[in-house]
Image (cartoon, rainbow, N blue to C red; front, side):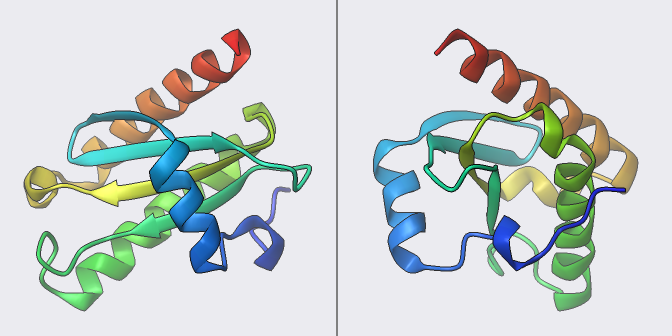
Length: 117
């Protein structure tokens, strides 16, 4: 069973800054995914879910739970990369099923990008 412990999270602002400056970007379905190589020895996840895009805290928290669960289930397919998931304005129009499908498509794109590199 895959876990999502503290080591799997981007914890420092410098890590986020590095991903924003150097990251490969792909977007769609209400989300933007940024990825950059890391030296941690495993993939790490960071999230930026804007209050401006998802007003209610309970909805932001549900969204984060779905993203973490999806990442946890796919972490073995990823290279040693840092991933930041950002919300976009059209995210509110998606339900949980659509969000899971969108994440699945993004993860496949990320795996394909990093296998080429």
